[in-house]
Length: 140
Image (tube, rainbow, N blue to C red; front, side, top):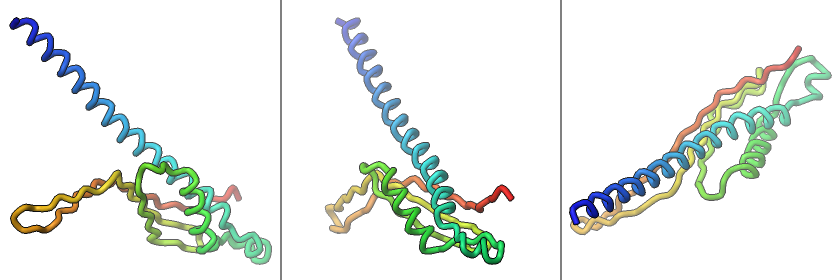
């Protein structure tokens, strides 16, 4: 009987280890996806917001702020996962020279716990923050 309990314990530890590895793999894959998505969406939105009329007239590389924000939000929403909540903050969008600073916070969820003594709610929030500072580089 003693050896049977050892066998059951080994199986339970194995199942717990597999669940733990799966949990961390999911977090890591989501983090990697969000950072790559942020990088690619920022670059594409900057190229879409490039003001070609200003470049043709004066030879100055310039982006349009409103167009950049619009393109960034559209592209990010098309590619982001629906299972998470995202907060997108634009810190700095310079038109000349083209430079942007963007921060994306992805949250997996919020749980509210009510204390029995005070009756107040405690908000527990788990978020992963990705930040990028990008400058548009042109080949010429």
